[in-house]
Image 1 (cartoon, one colour):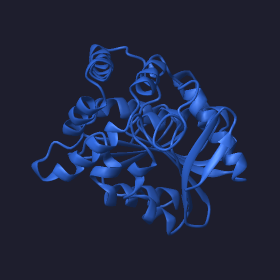
Image 2 (cartoon, rainbow, N blue to C red; image 1 turned 135 degrees about the horizontal axis):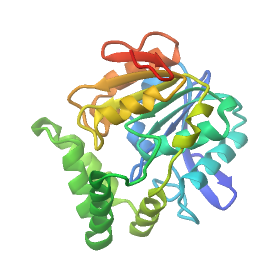
Image 3 (cartoon, rainbow, N blue to C red; image 1 turned 30 degrees about the horizontal axis):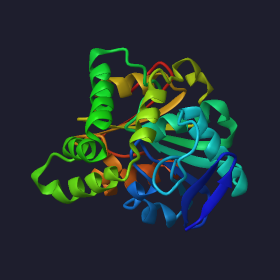
Image 4 (cartoon, rainbow, N blue to C red; image 1 turned 180 degrees about the horizontal axis):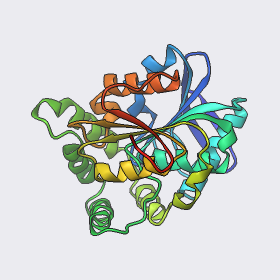
Length: 274
């Protein structure tokens, strides 16, 4: 298992395939294992690099757990791996990290995919405040097992999705309570809304019909970008890479190759969604 010794932390990552570099960033409470249904498809065409963010998966629990810190770790990792320009995918909190990287050094990123995420985690609505409070209290009071079980039920509610629920519950139970709570606190107030004009690369915004936030939020996000492609996954929830891996992989690979993303996708330029 490859590890990178970075400033202040020992980071685990997985690497597969050959070709143009493609970096995958997971969400809060997850790990690079959450890309297991995606990496084989991507590795047929790309050099896939999938790290465990610090404090999660097999990476070391160390120091600060803010978005900027996560982003800094990935830049250091890519320097060690001698990666200059690359494609970047971020899911949920990993999308926040990807967006932070993209506004900080846009010239380094060929194409960006923001999956089940938004450019701001500010709790500016009642629903968002409830979501953060629920997770914080569940983890703080009841611990990883109860939180992971509850989250798994929301991510995969179908009667045919028991295996995915079991998988998500088992993965969530491995989380460190303190790391999770500190990460959640650091996410509050994070935003790059005022910097979206720096995203000069093509961006694919992927959203689920039944995500934690309404589809209209994803539409507004895409509308603010210079070169936006928006695809909505009908009937899906917050973990599209796991819930609908084949559809997710197809959309990603088509976008990365410059082809139309497919049914249900819209392309627009800044100020317009068509």
